[in-house]
Image 1 (cartoon, rainbow over the protein chains, first blue to last red):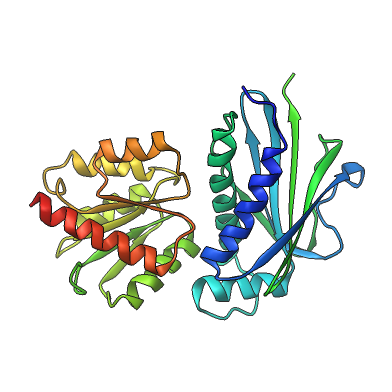
Image 2 (cartoon, rainbow over the protein chains, first blue to last red):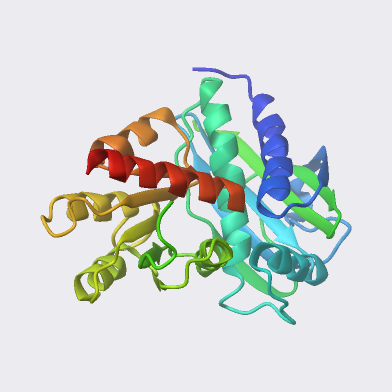
Length: 164
Length: 133
């Protein structure tokens, strides 16, 4: 079994860019950095209004992956995805965030597993509200994906720890 | 290609993805499109449809009844044994693709996808159905 965990953020980054390009017809760039999770928040320099989160696991690792958007970016995402304009995040349209995270993870997972891992499928859940943040309590650090796109900024966060 | 009057059932637990598929189908000229939010509701829609559904586009990972479970149920029922059934999924691992083919999927669309990809896959599915007729 591979321990080359550097392949994971690399494939996630590629998958984000590819998902934005194909599903949204939007160019995106991602800057990855490791951050201490002492603040236990997925937030970064922008306020997030919607975040989807999934727990991920393999035979040797557990972790989490999150994707978040500020309101303006998410409304633009919806317009790109659905061809309709929305004024707010609703229980109906919020699942677009989950769907995007699902696509990003599934696409990345295939490549990651080809590199010797055995990550399992996962189901995302979504929270929305004013300035959403998420606890990443069980992890000492996480990888922060600072995303910039033609339709606005977005954030991904990824954390992983070895199963004892 | 399938006739634009083809009766299509789109099944996905994500409203967003159903809307994307339906939007793309409408752009291709299709208009007789219904939807269901999981495999169990999809099966109900198939059984109740009159006239019958002529093409199913279904997600794989769904609560209650997955796309694969629905596909097996469909292929096990003489009424729907030859119904074109296209799987839509973000999972691209070879073993999963093989599982869908073995279960009788007509074709397989990987997310993310473009309108052009959907069109191509439907054209391939139509040819396959004609070839098997």
